[in-house]
Amino acid sequence: MGDSLLLFGIGAVLVFFLYREFKHKPKDAIEDLTKALDRVIEKVTPSAPPKKLPPYYDFFKLAAEKWKVPIRLMVATVDYESDFKTDAVNEEAEADEKWDFDVDSLGLGQILWPKTAQALAKKEKIIVKREDLFNPIINLNFVGSLYNELLKRYPTIESSGFPAMAVAAYNAGSAKYKANGDFINQTYVDRVRSRWVSWKGLQ
Image (cartoon, rainbow, N blue to C red; front, side):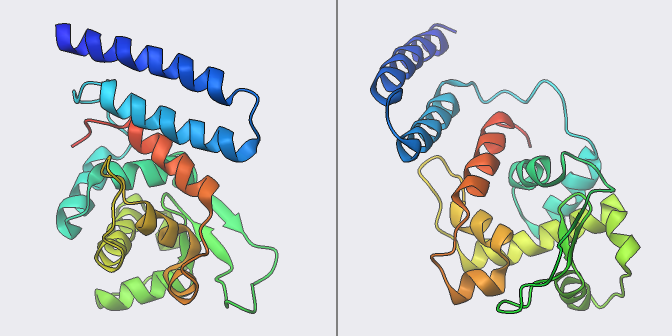
């Protein structure tokens, strides 16, 4: 308990100095401050399990164990992608011809339909329909499968353990990310990282 209080005190002092340093800085500096604060929270927060489990925890755990993917990463991604809403839909106004983007992002993990979903289904030798992506078991299985592939392709992690490159590829689409490794939606990565910090201790 004493060590935790000491770390918390150090963290509070660091937060104060970071705020004083960055409060009048431009947007990029503010984003750096956000990431710095996340790292502080990560270090000073005990690794106890979160106060509550996420919705569909059993399905998350099933997929995480099957695909050997950190459940915390899956939960953080879904938390941001859909706010745990199984019926979440993001309909693109038009396909991106240059990258041949899929039209719809569906369900908990906002799996792209049809190409990504069908590719993941083919990998498991199953057939899926669009409405199947609203089934939490199927959707989370695909989230796990996709991260299993991306974590192997982009194994680099930050000092905190957060796999930023794999998260960026999840957002961009693996084909687009592979074609242009500089294509990173930093806002997306930062927001998933923030949720990853908040789910510390989840197993």
